[in-house]
Length: 184
Image (cartoon, rainbow, N blue to C red; front, side):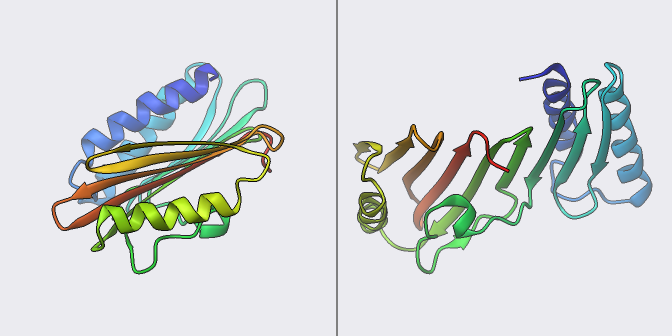
């Protein structure tokens, strides 16, 4: 991870702390926060554009060597096709939980969902979906009393998919993550 990207992560944490309730209340405060993050990132030659106006955080950076990074935290619009697995039928996206980070040619995605169905039913669904695409790939599954974690590692494509399923108070929480090296 380059220094500019690490600086962006620190600056994003500060922005999340400032807007912990979700939305920055005033445009002036929002603009000041954006400028403060951009200024913090520029100290090592990184150029940054920060946007807090859409209910999440978007940061685009270009470091001194020309390497670009983009981060969308909280409101990234991520499709099933991008993740590589279907979203559980009837599950609702957990507000403010989607993330996309593109660092050069590497992409990381995360989507959190909630279903009213039991964790056993959700686990069975994803077990079948992963099994259907597992040929030639490494599959790992760990189960526990309140859910399961499944991973699919494709060394040839330099990608991983992970599903984390946890029993929740009113159903099941699901986290889908995908990481791809060399993605465009």
